[in-house]
Amino acid sequence: MTAWTKVFLLIGLGLLAVDAAAPWWKTASFYQIYPRSFKDTDGDGVGDLNGVTEKLEYLKEIGVTATWLSPFLKSPMADFGYDISDFKEVDPLFGTMEDFEKMVSRAKELDVKIILDFVPNHSSDDCDWFLRSAAGEEQYKDYYIWHPGFVDDDGNRRPPTNWVSVFRGSAWEWHEGRQEYYLHQFHKKQPDFNFRNPVVREEMNNVLRFWLEKGVDGFRVDAIYHAFEIEADENGNYPDEPRNDWTDDPDEYGYTHKIYTVDQPETPHLVYEWRQILEQFQADNGGDERILMVETWSPIEIVMDYYGNSTADGAQIPFNFQLISNLHYDSDAYHYEYLINNWLNLMPEGKSANWVIGNHDKNRVGSRFGADRVDLFNILLLTLPGCSITYNGEELGMLDGYVSWEDTVDPQACNGYEANYMDNSRDPARTPMHWSDEKMAGFTTGKSTWLPVASDFTQRNVKTERGVSLSHLNVFKRLQALRQEPSIEEGSAEIKAVSNYVLAVKRHLSGNYVYISLFNIFDSIENVNLSNVFDDLPAKFQYALVTEKSIKKVGDQLSTSSVTLMPHESIVLRSTVTV
Image 1 (cartoon, rainbow, N blue to C red):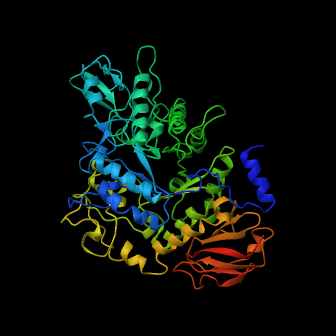
Image 2: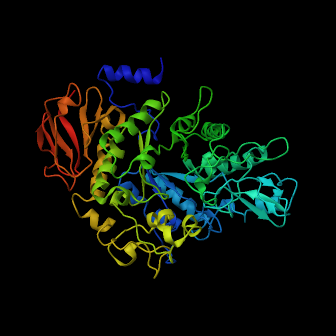
Image 3: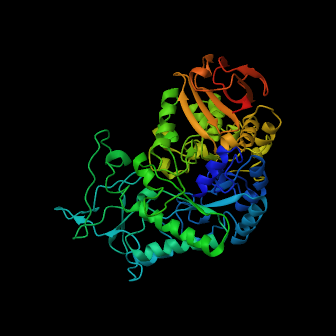
């Protein structure tokens, strides 16, 4: 008899409501910190590790289980830390290794787990490995993807293929010293590793082991779907990718159809290899399960491969980008229902769901969907089954900050044109965190910040929202408390569109209260008969959570047959009896 079978039998006997042995991450609340913008303690206008340590108690206050930290390793900052020159050193901009160790120690005291951003696809061109590879040293010459290119009839040298960088332009850069091109799927200062070289794989395996020894609880794996390219042919050459017909700009990333540069069949197996390293470390050292969170913007069927296969476990959390990628301002409830249920239906048996609606690469939730929907998305993420990932500031309802062309630093925008830079810039979602209504939003004691502080910080900040009963922050905190309820933490889920306008999520567990979250997506008043939506409901419910849109109070009772929702209102209801 399996452990889970025993659990279900006990639940059936009414003796157990929650599986006490469930892995910590399955229903965890993850919180992404972008360190540059979180808290600055030395007055230079850039957030640092000591700032994270200072605010760990805030994470505990808002119910966070674990925090994923965007990169803080040694880097020339061409892509703000995603171009790493030393995978085992802290960049002085963020502090020292001692600062990191103090942060980990304090996090363990508070029982907040630390997830490191692991960037395996590429390094900085300042990395010692790349310098040695460019110099042709035998041990390192195949650490990266090199090719001499071709000479045309006019004697001009051209790149090996038509592959295009995510940051515009050719994905190949000529290196004068080596007299060859190297591949960079992102910035030209971010050369791609050659993962077909087993020595490179072991180098990156050792990076994982190093940080595990330092006490991290897992890794968020960056851009994994770029790790492999199609293997070169017998002559060492690569094929061109086919053209897309929606752009004539050869520098535009969408100029080619990505069939050779992403989602190669070998890539999930790289993740399986890393999972084995984490499991071996746990077997040798004990402690809670260490995890992998994998970033891939691949088709959903490919994403599912990252969970594992019949012979190997993969990532515990392959990021679910269905909502962040496919929902739009005018999406109706049926669209929400489809995206949520499609993930749940395709997910391999025995695996756990995760939900993401914001991160450092996308405009803020309130700017994409409207400030009136901030609570809607926080309630949705925190009452769906599985774990949630919240980007810092979304619990406050922070909006995109305005960043002028002159102040723009994101290479994804700077490599383009001023006329449309706002369409490509990620800077607005990365402006400093709002801690108070004081100067510089309480982010720094300095006179300037690396990106401008958003102009609305006096209204949307931690200090102010703590004192407003139905602020986004306090709604978020109450949600975290509700997540501890057995029905929401471990119960079954039904997700249904009531109409074009209203989405409903039911959570239930035998012997416990039934919880129903309702979401009025648009700006009309809606009335819902829950008995027509879900079977076998109790006759009465009460409000378990309300927002500033609500005209009812927590504890007010209502009939299952008639629930009125105000425009953009989202609520959580609880049955008045257990079932």
